Image (cartoon, rainbow, N blue to C red; front, side, top):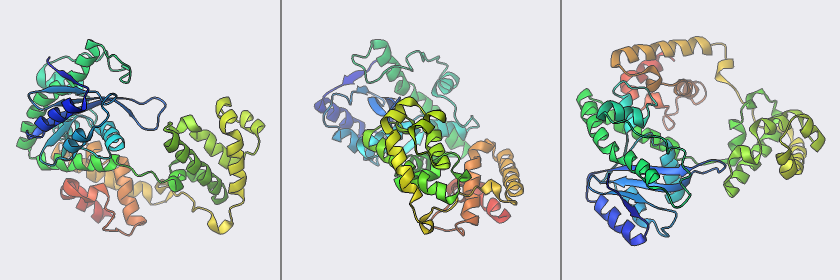
Length: 371
């Protein structure tokens, strides 16, 4: 397998210029995400059908040429299971690849499971057994071994012929436009704007708290997210979620009580006094400024029966289309639809997934009628 290492700005510019002359390129990234909030980019794999390049972003000072390729709408970028790759691109370059196609989504339109791995598809469509022994490599370490580089190169080397086979099958099945729409939807969901003031709504068990306890949790969750973003540390390495919840639930105002509740001794040492100060601050919030109680759809008496009716309708669409029910509409997407009707009065500027693009035509309108 031939590949070249790209580790200078000049080489990167030449590679990206060539890539922008073709219709379709294969893309992948290798990154490390252990204790950080954001993935740390270690390597970019790019294959334009002729030249396979392993781009080293750890040593290239200026990556403008690659950013321009990402934004070039005349070149289709193909990735597999692109979720975290998009997160990397958005964080590092402030851009995601447009237009883009995800081969995992293409496979789902051919009846494969929603999260079918790259190696499994390469094996099925190309008859090649990939060596995945280097999957846990530290991609920030240097130098990378030839085996590690070959592992990385294989991801885009085999992506091209696999994509071509999938494309032919997806077009023949009549799902090509839908696959494009679904790839766009996935991309839009990975570009997240973090709103610290709303972070408390994402804390597991927030629905169990009373408004006065939520006032404390809101302050704590906002602090934790701001700290994570500022220091690029994973949320639970700032302060564990269940401990944040407990501090709000029990109004914990002593280090000894934190120890009794089983808080990690390191987080007590680093942030214990800060958390205590915020609990006290939360207790001073006026009643008219308390957050609303976090409501769960499943607590409404009519929810269970309605959800079952929607699920049954999705099963019918699955049998008719040959697509997996979970791919057509996940539990989260069905709840999104119910929320849209019950809480947002079918706001046309905030449409749920099942009421847009290919899902709407296939079964979305039918679901809407049930509501």
